[in-house]
Image (cartoon, rainbow, N blue to C red):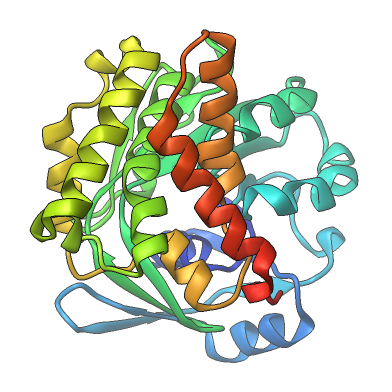
Length: 300
């Protein structure tokens, strides 16, 4: 299969590495010419969870017209960069399938404009860290869940990307998988970013654990439908499985990048207001993160 990946961050590199390993034809659309040149020259290096390395070859460009349209397009940029892709994505043929991978839940409304395309939504529960322009560290094996955005859309055979270290789970409820991932992120990311602690510290630090537990309780009250999607035991299990990892929000803070607090937590708080539910602890954490974003720590 031909695969175009828009965005060569940690998740984009991880997906492309596994797709290329499975002999799919991978093309990247990168933000900078420098990264495209290095990817074309060196390919992707993936550092495995066991410490081994694997190199794969890919093609990269900053120009959208250099990518095939008879391909699966995977949109792996952060939510606040989606608007910069609007013109290019709208110029694609209606037959081009789009797979969106963003944290949070805010992107669902944005992608409504592409309903004339076959659209799919994915959530990633792997641990990944971008080491440099061509190197991604696979820090924790999880599952990739994929669902059609519009029900009755024919499901592509995404299992062709599957391997022992990159499991694919096909789902039917796009909103459900996105809500589940957003709540996982809301429980873990803000606390780790504020306290600057690793995911595993949420289990070992008594006060951090109580904060996480309270956030989950608030979300469970506001979104009772998650009882069928996620338990607090699963939140704890993810913290344990990724215990040595920095959350994506902490990585953003440490690297002076804009955090994804708005599409993850801000969107959940907005939905809760619509349900006349208050989430005081989560709202406080939300303002803490916005405060250090506004303080000027961010550099992009």
